[in-house]
Length: 295
Length: 295
Image (cartoon, rainbow over the protein chains, first blue to last red):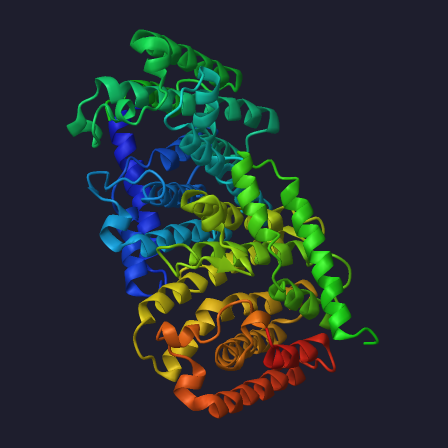
């Protein structure tokens, strides 16, 4: 890996954005307001973490070319729909996201609901219309996306998260919520990438575990940044978990305890990679990157 | 067809309900409130028109057994999600649906949004996990469902419908809205049924046209019932289109004109069936049924 992680991230971001936005800009969406609302949220930036993890997993298992791009784009569209709906007044009621007005603040609630619905709906045909995948692969990935994003996955996590507001959770409950709310889609990214590169079932199982740890690492660092972070770097107010009375890792374990917990997750994630016979990969770098990120 | 249409409708309704509810009741939805909210709307009854049209099309082209059931269930789930979201305060703001409280009135807005999201998401894996379909058939139906329900289909129709409120529309605009909002899914029902029974591409094209007429017939009768219907039979207040200043067929063409327009659509629908070499079928009966229904 002569290319730095920073350059790699930038390159993959550009590649994903160009594929995904090109596709949506050429869609026949009606009327213009719906199209504008969809594109507003898709163009709002974001780190494209999920598609990059998919690409990295795909490449770590020897995958080459653009085969995983449609699945990566579909996943980012599902992630974006979930942000649009989570921001709604009836849900988390957020006015800003990624430094700009949330979708419903800009386009109104009705359009925001429909834009979210449109992105979720579209994500499946993005995979269905992929050029380089076999029908079996498409069915597998569409079905798995439905499960990871559904009522036993991401949607369950969001519902549990809302129910947990204003109430103390145990570490076990906290892990369950995060595993569902963010872990399932992060795991999807990694497993889909490995699957499309032809990884064997037993390796896929290890990558599922790896994905779970990646989800937990992501969340602990999120909680830590809410205590120690710089609002101008994170792009949202620091201390909001305190205001929302949310259970967090630092609250349950103390700041040092949370950091120690994360080290444990990182070690377990690396162990999965070792067992899957993946060495010195972008997945290693991304694990470290996620555990030390400042935004 | 020795069995009466009434008996046929009842038998297919039962068959679809039993397949669909059994599937959702056995799903691992989390938490209980989400599962209750999803099942509340799915159990609320409704005529199951779309799945029945799919079964009828499937059978009219010689299809036998349960092959089309998963696609029929998926379609009804997409229809139900769209009703849950359309009823939301930010959208049509309805308190009652099928004689009972709307989902958000019963479970709150956040849960209703998530229950709708969950049904839409789940619909794709229902097809993905179907027993009797080839991978190619699954990919085709999942992709086509995404298109029919998406931002160039049903969601476009709902968005245009909201934008058209409180404003005069032409007959052409009205047809476009209805064709998108209800026609696309009704057409999906018919085309998917024919496809699964092995209909040829040129026949599929004819069934697409047939589906469009079925959608228009459905809508004209809806508008007529809003003027002439019996509120206790329809299950919603009569005259609501007048209150909402909505453009309708009777308003644009007069009541007699609307009825004449419907006769024209019925004749055109029958012509499609004739060209597709379908004679004396349930699809004929259902066309008449839809154009004369009282609820």
